[in-house]
Image 1 (spheres, rainbow, N blue to C red):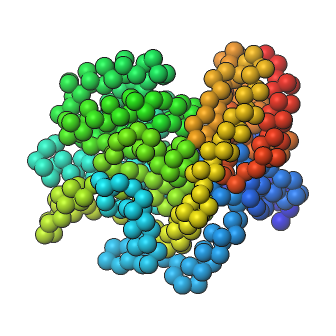
Image 2 (image 1 turned 180 degrees about the vertical axis):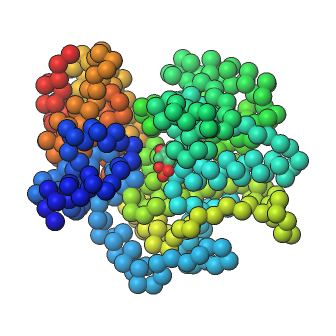
Image 3 (image 1 turned 90 degrees about the horizontal axis):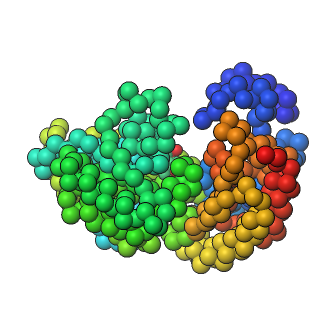
Length: 431
Ligand SMILES: *Cc1c(COP(=O)(O)O)cnc(C)c1O
């Protein structure tokens, strides 16, 4: 097929995610033929540097030789088996490794096949665990500006209005407490949290948060001091704490997991996205053994956690996840990323020269800045996106926040090219 054929068939048959399809009357969809390393290639051979890791999932480049080989091995052995009543080597290895990599308190793995489903699992399980203790706690607490996915439960605990507004009448009950906007607001946010806990604490099953970086909420980086104290306040009141590390896990935050920088252990840890380095859908919820033990009883409907997805713990996905952990182990990725991150920061700083570039920020392997001072209905982020494509860089801004969240295999010359291109683009932008 050539570009034209693909685009014609695409627009006839596909409703793309998170997209106003009418936008594509003017802005063509980009058909991708192949990928290698940080590059994606279209059907005309034009390359695009994947600056967003294909929606934050890719870690070690497209078509990574090592992961490919592990996936091919697995495909000739076992592609999938039902996980209820059955198991396989890949998932046993993966679970043992994840438990080994995380502290005591994250002792068991429950699998699903995407991030939102992991959030659903954690929400349902935390509610159910209280129920088994004879407590009906039917509310959840989350932070303002948070994002936890787009299924009904996950959407309910999120608070990015853009995704939520339309569905508000059909969502489950949830309380929002303010995330600190900056370090000066930590005390204020903790006071607000205390107020909510004093009033509603007894009704709350769980507090869910994205530690350190609210990614979909405009790459908002916030204080580990707040997180540590907030977690303690909730755990003191028997409110379970769910860390949604779906986006920040696997090195994005600068450590393998973000909780490491917060000096706390959550009761539930949700992981997905980077878990297979961008290869296959997989997610896992890790939790305390005490929670598992509450459900460990002779069969009774009320005591079993009757939750499953058809592709739960898929063997191909587990092979990719194990290969991903191999790379972390063998290539000292976290340390290497520190140097890479320093370089990116040094280059990104040069964007200071533009009056309309504000809040240049980073944490680990997440980099962002905002375009400010434009008329409210101007989609300047979209303008940057379009101009980026022309220059062979795939940026997908969040509104007027431009972010850079590259695969960890990105090299200095790519980074130079990206930020030179960004400068060219920003120079052409007029107020
Ligand atoms: C992407 C994301 C989710 C949802 O994961 P999906 O696989 O897209 O359902 C949940 N929480 C956070 C923080 C995310 O970034």
